[in-house]
Image 1 (cartoon, helix red, strand yellow):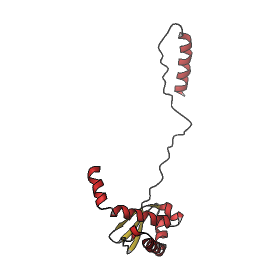
Image 2 (spheres, helix red, strand yellow):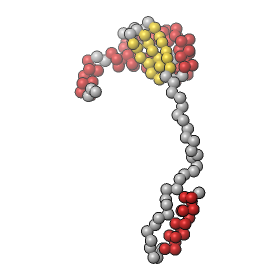
Image 3 (cartoon, helix red, strand yellow):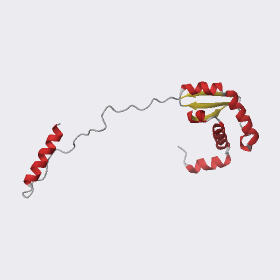
Image 4 (tube, helix red, strand yellow):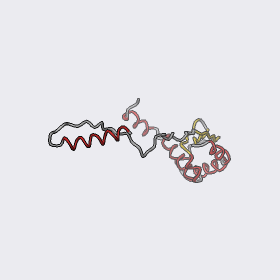
Length: 142
């Protein structure tokens, strides 16, 4: 793994990947809010812009709005100097759907008694400890 001393000079010499990501974030911010929330991340490979989405249903939405996305990208390239170098010929989308986490079957209101009723015997408090010990043992058995 590279250390920061190697990474930072490389980023200052070649800031294009960071500028490209900034442009992609600007493009995503121009999309409708429903579509913005469903996009996990985006990247450009070759001359194709890829969108990774939360749910397979939104893949159809991106495919339906490809012309809108291309128009927004051309407007962004005209308005923003840093986005002029991005060349996108195609747009593809796919989903990485993660199922919701499984809920535990154990009820939340109950708990297991961790005490076993063992105390240090003392002559002054022997009767009091014995009563507490019996109460704890009753709770642990139920």
